[in-house]
Image (cartoon, rainbow, N blue to C red):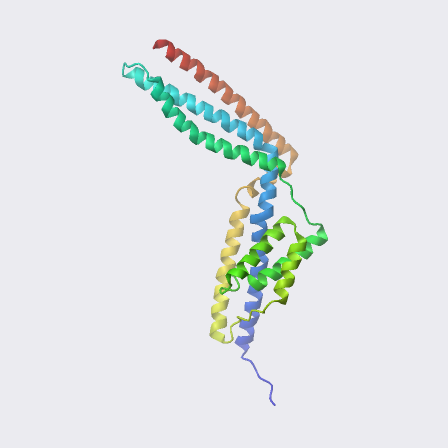
Length: 266
C-alpha cells in the first residue's frame, strides 16, 4: 500500500497553525499574569509606599477646592449687593463634598487594602511548573484557541486563572489533571483553505493579545515599576508629596483668611 503524500502547503500550514497556537498560549499566559498578580503586587507596593501620603494630599486638595468654591459663591452674592445665603451655599457645598468624599473613601480603602495585601509567591521551581500547567489548561480550553468553548470550559479556565495568580499550585495541578483526562478537543482544520483561515484568525488573535499586553505594561501600575525599584526615587517621591501637602496647607490657610475678610464685609 502506497504511503499518503500530503500537499507541501498543507504541511506548511499545519506547522504554522501549531506555531501560532503556541505563541498565543505564551502571550495569553503573560497577559493573564500581568493583569492578575503582577498588577496586584505592583499596586500593593505602590500603595504601601505612597498610598497614605497621596490620600492626605487628595484630602487637602479637596479641602482647598471647597474653600475656593465657598469664596466664589460668597462673592457672587456680594457682587450683586446681596447678603450671602449661607444655608444655600452650604447645601451646594455639601453636595459637591459628597462627590469628593466618595473618592476619598475609595482611596482610603485602596490604601488600607495595600497595607494588608499578601501573596504567596512561587519558588523558581514552582514558577516553572505552574507556568507549564497553566499553559496546558490554556491550550486545551481557552476561547482564543477554541471558539466553541463551553461555559463549563470557561468556568474551569477562570478557576485556573485564579489559582495561577494566587499561587494555589495544588488547585492548578488538579485542574490540569481534569483537563488532561477530559475529552480531547479536535477542532484542527482538515483542508488547506480552512488552515489558511485558521492562520489568519490566529495571527489576528496574536496581534490583539500582544497589543493588549503592551498597553497593560505601559499603564499604571507598570509605569511606576522603575520608580519603585530604586530607593532614591521612592524617597524623592515621598519628599515631593510632602512638599505638595505643605503647599496646599499654605493655600488653605490663605483661603481661610480671605473668607474671614469677606465675611467681615457682610
